Length: 391
Image 1 (cartoon, one colour):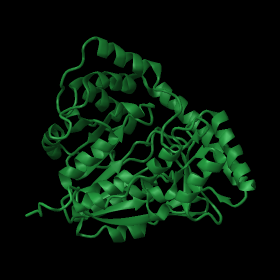
Image 2 (cartoon, helix red, strand yellow):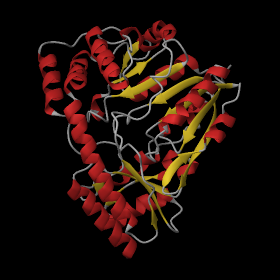
Image 3 (cartoon, helix red, strand yellow):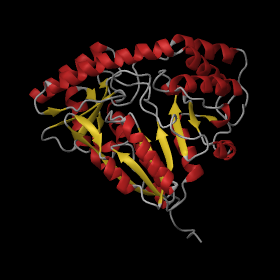
Image 4 (tube, helix red, strand yellow):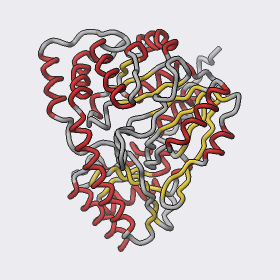
């Protein structure tokens, strides 16, 4: 029984959650118009016109009602076609669920398969939501760090395999990774999948940057072409990044068939369904968005080259090469407290970067720069950072 005189606060697992240091830094400079804002992961350009127009048309046509828990059939059909084109393997409508954002997809699948006390493995540094969602559900977290080596971030596959023990309930993989840009090598997929099959581990991938890779190919290596349609593999994704739809809060999941009915129930008890008219915009994105994605990839490649070369020209800066995403993750010699450094940069250089400590202890000492911006904005950021370091 709860002591009626105890404080009216959240349960211990929620009180123990880390507050987002990205938000802490952003709050320190958000109101200032003179601060260059590189702290959040989104483009500085709005959603393409063809998506906004399709959505506005749907809204004005009265598409404002509840929809199927798993998403409108026409959207799931468009998503099925898109995934088959992308991965060159059929992904049936019956395995798809539309969610209210990619992070909502991560929470929903976690609610479906993770119980209190379960062991969950995550590669880090990682987007805070990936590590905090299992903690909200009272799971035990084990992290496997990525390491910077030979100018790139790398995963020690043997170390990951050692962490995937018979008592592991789920492995969360984010590739391309936020914040580092590390991307899972194609040859590592089969052994990871084999280990998960051996021990009955849920393999849950967070794939928002899979289309935003630097190099050839349509997307980053995915487990979808390797996985059977009814095994413990779930791919979560979002419309936020590749289609510049961050504020729309629209995502999806590819599920094993046996999980779909339960997921519909979980969605009902979380959000009921995704917004009707926004699903019309998502259909337009899937059907007509390939030229836009190609343009965005070209922009991000040029931005990466500009920012990474500029950072490496500054004294004491180490900036490993990202293989995908929209971030430069770098560190400055002698600047170990990334939160203090990020706040000092706002105060003295008028620029906002995300502290590496926001992505876990493995990120301490690093800074994340979202370079999905116009060239002149990135160039001015480099100038200000250079002046700060030179001062």
